[in-house]
Length: 485
Image 1: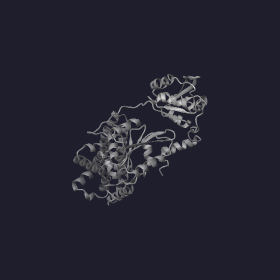
Image 2: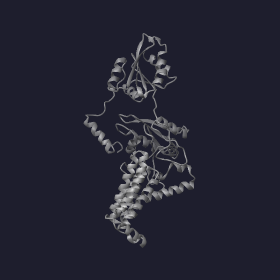
Image 3: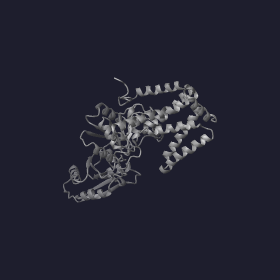
């Protein structure tokens, strides 16, 4: 199941790939040649139409002089480091006569190892991947071996505060798009040899670096093995963000409830590892995956770890209440107005009836119209530039709500219900958990319009049954609540 393509975009890319007549061109898997020109011919054929791949030819200080070449991508390497620590070190090294073959490569490697990380390579596949990864590859005529020199340039943005998980008290740093920086942020918080970091590459075209992080002796070995097993089964052409991996390794991809948490806060990841979770860090994204998770974890915020127990407990109870309000309130309003008017006090019933008198729609369509309008406003506020987006969300909601009531399209009570629902959904700290509530709100309203409170209870029982069947890497989704032993 985890090897199958998930999502329309994956299917589309596979279809385009087939229409083009096959997959991406494969890199030769045979060994390097002893002839420099033959090696360069193969590499130039592989990197055809790649203007940024450079070939720096020079002569080694041997007797007789031996041709050599450095292959690299100009914008991915530190050019100054390449010239000062690689070319200068090689050209300044007196090799003399009689130095040939593997002895020559070992001598060159020894002259570089003092300042740079180096490694030997003997196949075209590893040499090409080294160039694409930002290293320089040294080829020498007469030797069927190459040296990889790590001179990668790390372009990154500054470490700033998280935009998606703000806190009043706590650290202000967040992960960035560079994997090495993210690993460092994690190491600063967990300075123990028990922190294990296992690297792999996923994506036939992107070769994205992925790191599995866990605390040995704390994380369950079966869970660690299962995470690595699912990651190893992923067959995809590219990984551009951690969400690609999340879709492949979670237990039930089509469930509205996320079985994997994502965060850009290093302190939250460190806390999860200390509690036995496993983290998956992906290069080129600040969002780290945490697993396994339970339902109650989506009511946790990073700030809870820095608050007094009584404050954190009270806040979590408020979030749980808000979750129920965001999920049930519109459906409860539709059920009461449509079927169960006798449940309301007389004065409140007369007030709601007076407000609904000019409305030409039934309560379900009225709620559906307002909820859909608010979702459109919310999405517009996210997609527009930040200063404009905030103004659009607030002003748009006020103007549209007031105009809809004045025009008799919706009742004032419905505007209040939708506003309370929106506020309650904003309190849920995990965006993926909030999405689940927003999606399930609509089928609940449908059941309420069809069967009243009986329909609401049927829908809630179906949701609860689904939650009971969910597992996150073998851990029951409702752990701490059910099953009860």
